[in-house]
Amino acid sequence: MENILLNDQEAERALEMEYNITGCLLMDTERTLKTIRNLISAEDFQNDTCRAIYLASLDLYSSGKPLDYGLIQDRAIELGYSIDLGISRQVRLCYTTTANAEANARNMHKESQNRQAAAVGLELAYRQISPLEGAGKLQEILKKQNYSAASPEEMANELADYLFREDSEPPFLSTGYCTLDNIFSGGFVHGGLYVFAARTNVGKTNIAINISERVAAQGKHVLYFSLEMPRKDINIRRIGILKGLNTAKVKNKMYIDDEKKGLQIMQALNTISERRIRIYDIPATLDEIEREVRCYDDLDLIVIDHIGIIAPVGEMAKMGPYQLMTNISHRLKRLALSTGTPILALCQLNREVEKQNREPILSDLRDSGAIEEDSDAVCLMHRESLGWPEEQRPKANEPDTIKFLIKKNRHGATGSTTMEYYGINSRITEEVQNK
Image (cartoon, rainbow, N blue to C red):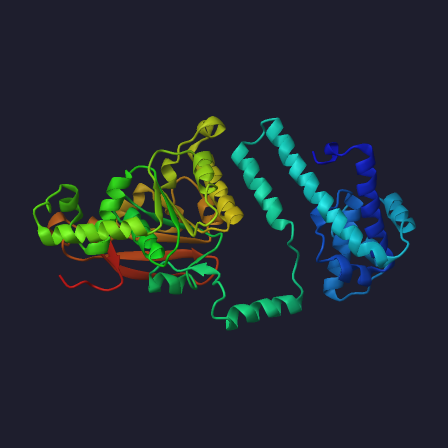
């Protein structure tokens, strides 16, 4: 689609730049690669033969093998790339000097960016994608505009800056829980997708609220999508978490005549007014979620409670459960990457876990294997006591044990940890509270 956006003169100029750079690669490979490899990528080439020569040159160079015209062509064929020998001869005729290779590479990359952006515009014009999908694609293109592979020296300096400067920004967001942070190698990475999954009543929403509260307490900005619970109920649970109050009594206004408890509620409300947690509490489609997210440029955490009730519309409404969940999972990962903001998404597990009262496994994720593939980490939650007879379960004011099983972790090892769960006030803590 990108090619049809060029007029004849533009197409000729773009091809001339590609031929010039490819000619330099064939005639003076090592010097040309040192000049251009941090300025362009394979996707910047429109011509298949030119792209193949570039990729073959990189492969030989990285392997420390000899570089010449014949070896490059042979290597390209070995790698399965398409080589037009007529074009290969023609690009060698375009070689004059490597002096202009850098300028040509920069212009070629810029033209590639323009073509990609114009192609998105064409998709929008023909309504092949939604405006929000278009915005996401454009944002990804812009993020790549000044990006290039770093040299060893640049990487070493960057790492030294991170390791030895106290004020450098960490590459992760602390969850507020030391045990979870340790397993996640520091917390949620920027642009990561983290799925917390459990059966009903295990505590998915409560862990999401507790993490949100602890993140906001660090001065961070949280956007919480509560797709089935009104924000009033979320904030009542926040009061319970902040002050240890019985959330049912707070909701039923049973503390109106209790001066001490009333003061605690007012203190909690003051904290809620100061902490930057925004709650979106109406049913939403993926497009509406993405539109809301892109209204802010300073988000530190996005929470979605939960992905199983994201409203399907348009073509998504025609999808089966597996295809629908796969689409949602891909879109959420793309949203996290394009915004650079970690997403904490809650997910329902299959009923078999509840029926058998066993610890969940990854295959219990409901309706899709894509969730496991797209996620940076998957945490499965389990409360064994829910399978016990009613009389044997902990009372509402007694701590219950909730187990967090990290079954996938792209940035570290898998593992598990247990915490104390207090249903009476929605708190989930790493230490037993004195009651």
